[in-house]
Length: 146
Image: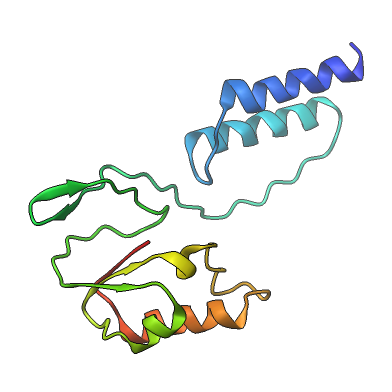
């Protein structure tokens, strides 16, 4: 079997047959087993380092305003919540800083949502992202929508 055909088979198995494989999912474990098997069959010595990696699924998402259902999608690894609170909106960092957001449902839009915020632990996060994250954690809103 030529290399190109063999690579196409691996891509077919991983990308099509196993498909999307979020961390911790059954598909993620299937991809791990497949790759482990291919490497072992090729005569490579394989060392596996296991670590806990939770899978996340969304059972349902519901957002209501005055009894009317609004379109909503949960962010991966969002904790479940059942929140009823006044809504405060913010489009810019200045608006977020000026708003009383403690215990409120905060709706971020516009400039605050033009790009995802960097993870807190990421060493390359911008001062802007660090400021926004600190503001949100310090003020403790009831929930955050973007």
